[in-house]
Image 1 (tube, rainbow, N blue to C red):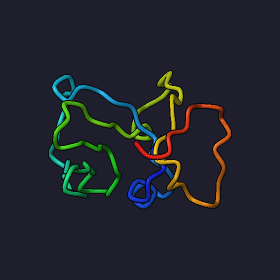
Image 2: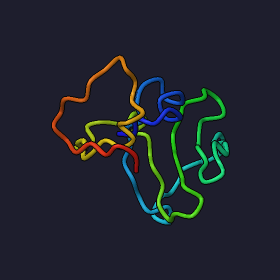
Image 3: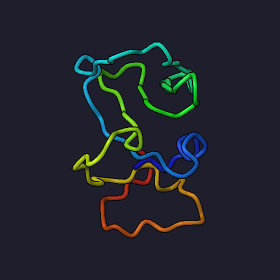
Image 4: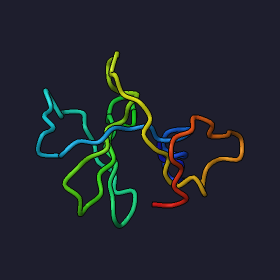
Length: 104
């Protein structure tokens, strides 16, 4: 779970994702996939038709973050940690007992 301001603005709350090596990710079709350079160090992938946020990829990293909300369930995923909690919204508390990292 990422609680940074950019992820909160993009997702409307906090960014929940899983991670995979980019070279292991395959697309049945990427016709509607659009990429936005959200910073000097990363880009975000989204659906060009509906605007759904789908991916987050650091420019110098081999992996890719995949939005948990876009995956069909059941996924079997669980929360492992929270990052950028120093930037979380003031309207919620993190109470699941998972590790909380102030930045990253």
